[in-house]
Image (cartoon, rainbow, N blue to C red; front, side, top):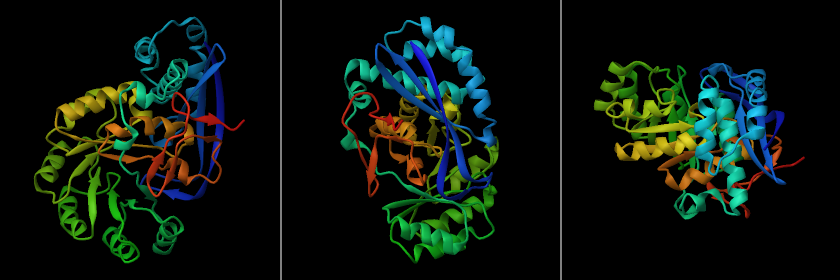
Length: 337
Protein backbone atom coordinates (compact mmCIF):
# COMPACT_ATOMS: atom_id res chain seq x y z
CA UNK A 1 0.00 0.00 0.00
CA UNK A 2 1.48 3.31 -1.11
CA UNK A 3 1.24 6.53 0.90
CA UNK A 4 0.92 9.94 -0.78
CA UNK A 5 0.68 13.22 1.13
CA UNK A 6 -1.00 16.31 -0.32
CA UNK A 7 -0.60 19.54 1.70
CA UNK A 8 -3.01 22.40 1.00
CA UNK A 9 -3.54 25.95 2.22
CA UNK A 10 -7.31 26.23 2.10
CA UNK A 11 -8.45 29.79 1.41
CA UNK A 12 -11.59 30.81 3.32
CA UNK A 13 -14.42 32.95 1.97
CA UNK A 14 -14.29 35.14 5.06
CA UNK A 15 -12.04 35.51 8.08
CA UNK A 16 -13.27 32.92 10.58
CA UNK A 17 -13.10 33.91 14.24
CA UNK A 18 -13.80 31.88 17.37
CA UNK A 19 -12.72 32.35 20.99
CA UNK A 20 -9.31 30.81 20.37
CA UNK A 21 -8.22 32.33 17.05
CA UNK A 22 -8.97 34.08 13.75
CA UNK A 23 -7.90 32.72 10.39
CA UNK A 24 -8.31 33.37 6.66
CA UNK A 25 -6.21 30.39 5.54
CA UNK A 26 -6.51 26.84 6.87
CA UNK A 27 -3.53 24.48 6.34
CA UNK A 28 -4.78 20.95 5.74
CA UNK A 29 -3.11 17.63 4.95
CA UNK A 30 -4.83 15.19 2.63
CA UNK A 31 -3.59 11.61 2.87
CA UNK A 32 -3.90 9.18 -0.04
CA UNK A 33 -3.57 5.42 0.39
CA UNK A 34 -3.16 3.63 -2.93
CA UNK A 35 -3.42 -0.09 -3.57
CA UNK A 36 -3.86 -1.98 -6.84
CA UNK A 37 -4.80 1.18 -8.71
CA UNK A 38 -7.42 2.33 -6.21
CA UNK A 39 -6.98 5.30 -3.89
CA UNK A 40 -8.66 6.27 -0.64
CA UNK A 41 -8.46 9.78 0.78
CA UNK A 42 -8.39 11.20 4.30
CA UNK A 43 -7.81 14.65 5.76
CA UNK A 44 -6.75 16.45 8.92
CA UNK A 45 -6.57 20.19 9.49
CA UNK A 46 -3.64 21.78 11.28
CA UNK A 47 -4.96 23.45 14.44
CA UNK A 48 -2.78 25.62 16.65
CA UNK A 49 -5.19 25.34 19.60
CA UNK A 50 -4.60 21.57 19.69
CA UNK A 51 -0.89 21.82 18.76
CA UNK A 52 -1.51 20.07 15.44
CA UNK A 53 0.95 21.20 12.77
CA UNK A 54 1.50 20.24 9.16
CA UNK A 55 5.13 19.44 9.96
CA UNK A 56 4.20 17.15 12.83
CA UNK A 57 1.55 15.23 10.89
CA UNK A 58 3.87 14.85 7.90
CA UNK A 59 6.72 13.59 10.09
CA UNK A 60 4.52 11.09 11.90
CA UNK A 61 3.00 9.69 8.71
CA UNK A 62 6.31 9.51 6.86
CA UNK A 63 7.67 7.40 9.71
CA UNK A 64 4.92 4.87 8.98
CA UNK A 65 5.66 4.57 5.27
CA UNK A 66 7.62 1.24 5.55
CA UNK A 67 4.96 -0.23 7.85
CA UNK A 68 2.12 0.76 5.52
CA UNK A 69 3.90 -0.68 2.49
CA UNK A 70 3.83 -4.12 4.12
CA UNK A 71 0.62 -3.85 6.18
CA UNK A 72 -2.01 -6.56 5.82
CA UNK A 73 -5.61 -5.90 6.79
CA UNK A 74 -9.09 -6.95 5.74
CA UNK A 75 -11.10 -4.12 7.30
CA UNK A 76 -10.20 -0.58 8.41
CA UNK A 77 -10.56 -1.52 12.08
CA UNK A 78 -7.77 -4.08 11.64
CA UNK A 79 -5.39 -1.42 10.33
CA UNK A 80 -6.55 1.11 12.91
CA UNK A 81 -5.79 -1.24 15.80
CA UNK A 82 -2.29 -1.81 14.39
CA UNK A 83 -1.56 1.86 13.77
CA UNK A 84 -3.26 3.56 16.73
CA UNK A 85 -0.49 2.74 19.26
CA UNK A 86 2.09 4.18 16.85
CA UNK A 87 0.12 7.43 16.47
CA UNK A 88 -1.30 7.77 19.97
CA UNK A 89 0.49 11.13 20.25
CA UNK A 90 -0.90 12.34 16.92
CA UNK A 91 -4.70 11.82 16.65
CA UNK A 92 -5.02 14.18 13.68
CA UNK A 93 -2.53 12.17 11.62
CA UNK A 94 -4.27 8.99 12.75
CA UNK A 95 -7.60 10.49 11.64
CA UNK A 96 -6.36 11.25 8.13
CA UNK A 97 -4.89 7.76 7.81
CA UNK A 98 -7.98 5.99 9.18
CA UNK A 99 -10.24 8.07 6.96
CA UNK A 100 -8.16 7.14 3.90
CA UNK A 101 -8.23 3.47 4.90
CA UNK A 102 -12.02 3.50 5.26
CA UNK A 103 -12.39 5.22 1.89
CA UNK A 104 -10.01 2.72 0.26
CA UNK A 105 -11.86 -0.21 1.85
CA UNK A 106 -15.15 1.07 0.43
CA UNK A 107 -13.63 1.43 -3.01
CA UNK A 108 -12.20 -2.08 -2.86
CA UNK A 109 -15.64 -3.39 -1.86
CA UNK A 110 -17.27 -1.27 -4.55
CA UNK A 111 -19.80 0.24 -2.12
CA UNK A 112 -20.30 3.54 -0.27
CA UNK A 113 -19.22 3.44 3.35
CA UNK A 114 -22.73 4.17 4.61
CA UNK A 115 -23.92 1.02 2.86
CA UNK A 116 -21.12 -1.09 4.33
CA UNK A 117 -22.12 0.27 7.76
CA UNK A 118 -25.80 -0.58 7.07
CA UNK A 119 -26.87 3.06 7.21
CA UNK A 120 -29.48 4.90 5.15
CA UNK A 121 -28.62 8.43 3.87
CA UNK A 122 -32.30 9.30 4.21
CA UNK A 123 -31.77 9.23 7.99
CA UNK A 124 -29.09 11.93 7.91
CA UNK A 125 -30.03 15.15 9.74
CA UNK A 126 -29.62 18.54 8.10
CA UNK A 127 -26.28 20.21 8.65
CA UNK A 128 -25.99 23.62 10.21
CA UNK A 129 -23.97 26.47 8.71
CA UNK A 130 -21.56 28.21 11.07
CA UNK A 131 -21.43 31.96 11.59
CA UNK A 132 -18.09 32.87 13.15
CA UNK A 133 -17.55 35.82 15.45
CA UNK A 134 -17.51 39.16 13.65
CA UNK A 135 -19.25 42.52 13.75
CA UNK A 136 -23.05 42.43 13.84
CA UNK A 137 -23.17 43.69 10.26
CA UNK A 138 -20.78 41.00 9.05
CA UNK A 139 -22.65 38.21 10.81
CA UNK A 140 -25.95 39.32 9.32
CA UNK A 141 -24.32 39.60 5.88
CA UNK A 142 -22.99 36.04 6.16
CA UNK A 143 -26.47 34.74 6.92
CA UNK A 144 -27.96 36.66 4.04
CA UNK A 145 -25.21 35.40 1.72
CA UNK A 146 -26.24 31.80 2.40
CA UNK A 147 -29.86 31.32 3.53
CA UNK A 148 -29.91 28.10 5.58
CA UNK A 149 -32.37 26.19 7.78
CA UNK A 150 -29.98 25.90 10.78
CA UNK A 151 -27.18 28.23 11.86
CA UNK A 152 -24.54 27.58 14.50
CA UNK A 153 -23.47 30.87 16.04
CA UNK A 154 -20.04 31.22 17.61
CA UNK A 155 -20.31 33.17 20.85
CA UNK A 156 -18.01 33.91 23.78
CA UNK A 157 -18.13 37.71 23.62
CA UNK A 158 -19.46 40.51 25.83
CA UNK A 159 -22.40 40.87 23.43
CA UNK A 160 -23.62 37.27 23.16
CA UNK A 161 -27.27 37.95 23.88
CA UNK A 162 -27.33 41.01 21.63
CA UNK A 163 -25.82 38.95 18.81
CA UNK A 164 -28.58 36.35 18.95
CA UNK A 165 -31.31 38.98 19.27
CA UNK A 166 -29.95 40.85 16.25
CA UNK A 167 -29.58 37.74 14.09
CA UNK A 168 -33.04 36.54 15.06
CA UNK A 169 -34.55 39.67 13.51
CA UNK A 170 -33.22 38.53 10.12
CA UNK A 171 -34.23 34.86 10.00
CA UNK A 172 -36.58 32.28 11.48
CA UNK A 173 -33.97 29.51 11.07
CA UNK A 174 -33.06 27.24 13.98
CA UNK A 175 -30.09 28.54 15.97
CA UNK A 176 -27.44 26.53 17.79
CA UNK A 177 -24.85 28.35 19.86
CA UNK A 178 -21.26 27.44 20.66
CA UNK A 179 -19.89 29.31 23.65
CA UNK A 180 -16.40 27.86 23.05
CA UNK A 181 -15.74 27.42 26.81
CA UNK A 182 -16.20 31.17 27.51
CA UNK A 183 -19.03 31.20 30.08
CA UNK A 184 -19.33 30.65 33.81
CA UNK A 185 -21.88 28.13 35.16
CA UNK A 186 -24.16 30.97 36.27
CA UNK A 187 -23.94 32.66 32.86
CA UNK A 188 -24.70 29.40 31.09
CA UNK A 189 -27.86 28.76 33.09
CA UNK A 190 -29.10 32.34 32.75
CA UNK A 191 -28.35 32.39 29.02
CA UNK A 192 -30.12 29.07 28.48
CA UNK A 193 -33.49 30.55 29.43
CA UNK A 194 -32.97 33.69 27.37
CA UNK A 195 -31.71 31.75 24.35
CA UNK A 196 -34.54 29.23 24.48
CA UNK A 197 -37.01 32.09 23.97
CA UNK A 198 -34.98 33.14 20.90
CA UNK A 199 -35.30 29.82 19.13
CA UNK A 200 -31.95 28.28 20.11
CA UNK A 201 -31.88 24.48 19.98
CA UNK A 202 -28.87 23.70 22.20
CA UNK A 203 -25.69 25.12 23.72
CA UNK A 204 -22.30 23.66 22.88
CA UNK A 205 -19.48 23.55 25.48
CA UNK A 206 -20.35 26.55 27.66
CA UNK A 207 -17.62 25.92 30.27
CA UNK A 208 -13.93 25.17 30.17
CA UNK A 209 -13.19 21.44 30.00
CA UNK A 210 -12.43 19.99 33.40
CA UNK A 211 -14.96 22.13 35.25
CA UNK A 212 -17.10 19.11 36.10
CA UNK A 213 -18.63 20.67 39.20
CA UNK A 214 -19.77 23.68 37.23
CA UNK A 215 -20.97 21.48 34.39
CA UNK A 216 -23.06 19.40 36.79
CA UNK A 217 -24.78 22.63 37.87
CA UNK A 218 -25.45 23.61 34.25
CA UNK A 219 -26.73 20.11 33.42
CA UNK A 220 -29.17 20.21 36.32
CA UNK A 221 -30.52 23.71 35.70
CA UNK A 222 -30.17 24.57 31.99
CA UNK A 223 -33.33 25.23 30.00
CA UNK A 224 -31.58 23.89 26.89
CA UNK A 225 -29.65 20.70 26.12
CA UNK A 226 -25.89 21.11 26.51
CA UNK A 227 -23.45 19.34 24.17
CA UNK A 228 -19.87 18.43 25.03
CA UNK A 229 -17.12 19.39 22.56
CA UNK A 230 -13.80 20.20 24.20
CA UNK A 231 -14.81 17.85 27.03
CA UNK A 232 -15.14 14.88 24.65
CA UNK A 233 -12.10 14.07 22.52
CA UNK A 234 -11.43 10.32 22.70
CA UNK A 235 -13.46 7.17 23.35
CA UNK A 236 -12.74 7.17 27.09
CA UNK A 237 -14.34 10.63 27.38
CA UNK A 238 -17.83 9.52 26.35
CA UNK A 239 -18.74 7.81 29.61
CA UNK A 240 -17.34 10.76 31.57
CA UNK A 241 -19.86 13.07 29.88
CA UNK A 242 -22.92 11.08 30.95
CA UNK A 243 -24.69 12.98 33.72
CA UNK A 244 -22.88 16.22 32.86
CA UNK A 245 -23.96 16.81 29.25
CA UNK A 246 -27.06 15.89 27.27
CA UNK A 247 -25.00 14.88 24.27
CA UNK A 248 -21.53 14.73 22.75
CA UNK A 249 -20.06 16.42 19.69
CA UNK A 250 -17.39 14.12 18.26
CA UNK A 251 -14.64 15.46 15.99
CA UNK A 252 -12.82 12.95 13.81
CA UNK A 253 -9.50 14.79 14.02
CA UNK A 254 -9.65 14.71 17.82
CA UNK A 255 -10.65 11.07 18.29
CA UNK A 256 -8.52 9.59 15.50
CA UNK A 257 -10.88 8.99 12.58
CA UNK A 258 -14.11 7.21 11.57
CA UNK A 259 -13.20 3.92 13.28
CA UNK A 260 -13.05 5.29 16.85
CA UNK A 261 -15.88 7.71 16.05
CA UNK A 262 -18.17 4.75 15.29
CA UNK A 263 -17.24 3.20 18.62
CA UNK A 264 -17.92 6.48 20.43
CA UNK A 265 -21.29 6.95 18.75
CA UNK A 266 -22.49 3.49 19.70
CA UNK A 267 -21.36 3.99 23.31
CA UNK A 268 -23.00 7.41 23.49
CA UNK A 269 -26.29 5.98 22.29
CA UNK A 270 -26.07 3.17 24.85
CA UNK A 271 -25.70 5.83 27.58
CA UNK A 272 -28.70 7.81 26.35
CA UNK A 273 -26.62 10.72 25.06
CA UNK A 274 -27.53 12.69 21.95
CA UNK A 275 -24.96 12.36 19.19
CA UNK A 276 -23.35 14.90 16.92
CA UNK A 277 -20.28 15.05 14.71
CA UNK A 278 -18.59 18.36 14.10
CA UNK A 279 -16.05 19.33 11.51
CA UNK A 280 -13.03 21.54 11.25
CA UNK A 281 -12.50 23.94 8.36
CA UNK A 282 -11.70 21.27 5.79
CA UNK A 283 -12.20 20.23 2.21
CA UNK A 284 -14.80 17.90 0.76
CA UNK A 285 -12.50 14.97 1.57
CA UNK A 286 -13.08 15.32 5.30
CA UNK A 287 -16.70 16.43 4.95
CA UNK A 288 -17.58 13.46 2.73
CA UNK A 289 -16.25 11.10 5.39
CA UNK A 290 -18.37 12.74 8.08
CA UNK A 291 -21.42 12.48 5.84
CA UNK A 292 -21.07 8.69 5.71
CA UNK A 293 -21.59 8.62 9.48
CA UNK A 294 -24.37 11.20 9.53
CA UNK A 295 -27.33 8.77 9.45
CA UNK A 296 -26.26 7.71 12.97
CA UNK A 297 -26.51 11.25 14.32
CA UNK A 298 -29.07 13.46 16.01
CA UNK A 299 -27.23 16.60 14.84
CA UNK A 300 -24.39 17.28 12.44
CA UNK A 301 -22.04 20.15 11.74
CA UNK A 302 -20.36 19.37 8.42
CA UNK A 303 -20.23 22.77 6.77
CA UNK A 304 -16.43 23.10 6.66
CA UNK A 305 -16.12 22.97 2.88
CA UNK A 306 -18.88 25.57 2.52
CA UNK A 307 -16.60 28.05 4.28
CA UNK A 308 -13.90 27.71 1.59
CA UNK A 309 -13.27 30.06 -1.30
CA UNK A 310 -11.73 27.20 -3.30
CA UNK A 311 -12.23 23.52 -2.48
CA UNK A 312 -9.41 21.27 -3.83
CA UNK A 313 -11.76 18.27 -3.70
CA UNK A 314 -15.31 17.30 -4.50
CA UNK A 315 -17.69 14.80 -2.98
CA UNK A 316 -20.78 15.28 -0.83
CA UNK A 317 -22.52 18.59 -1.56
CA UNK A 318 -25.40 20.38 0.12
CA UNK A 319 -28.76 21.82 -0.80
CA UNK A 320 -30.29 23.94 1.98
CA UNK A 321 -28.69 21.77 4.68
CA UNK A 322 -29.40 18.40 3.05
CA UNK A 323 -26.42 16.25 2.09
CA UNK A 324 -26.40 15.09 -1.53
CA UNK A 325 -24.24 11.97 -1.71
CA UNK A 326 -22.14 11.39 -4.81
CA UNK A 327 -22.31 8.19 -6.77
CA UNK A 328 -19.36 5.91 -6.24
CA UNK A 329 -17.73 3.80 -3.57
CA UNK A 330 -16.03 4.74 -0.32
CA UNK A 331 -16.73 8.32 0.69
CA UNK A 332 -17.16 9.36 -2.94
CA UNK A 333 -14.59 12.15 -2.53
CA UNK A 334 -11.85 12.86 -5.04
CA UNK A 335 -9.12 15.42 -5.44
CA UNK A 336 -9.19 17.92 -8.28
CA UNK A 337 -5.55 17.35 -9.24
